[in-house]
Image (tube, rainbow, N blue to C red; front, side, top):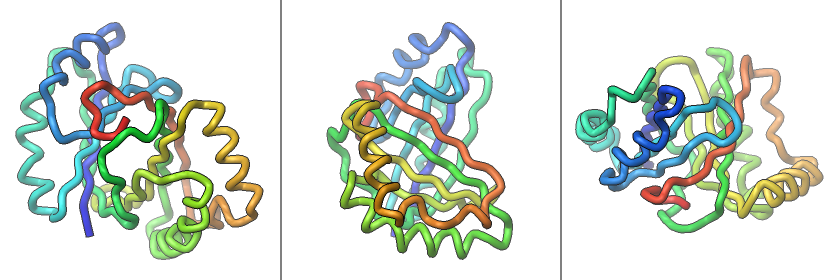
Length: 189
């Protein structure tokens, strides 16, 4: 099992270039800027084999952030329920999807996602599927695509199977989606 941390950086309008420049020395992270969704946001993603290793690396990452250009920093720890893809080049756009679940709904959501993912991955690869370890119960998944047209085609093909998306709507309270563009420092690009 592995663990993942997301660090969402809400950046002051007009400061994205300064933040990207300040992050250029950061290593061992996935890094994306939001193209569609919450604007002026950078997403960082780190993975570790143990929860302890994830937590012990957090202070170094947080201290390297250019706080003078940030409006908000949101950190979440996750348990990876599917393997985290090896670092590499997978596409020019990524889609981050996150679902909040009813407090008693997470076991059903996780089970249904895990059952549906193998067939979905026959259509296109998955970077990871995550379950939150704190805060509101959430499940998230990150998908790479060659471009936005490929995303539309792959999602339509997955839905056409009748097995995607997983039948989790009765257990959810909120759904979000963002289109992300990888930064040069990103482990996944």
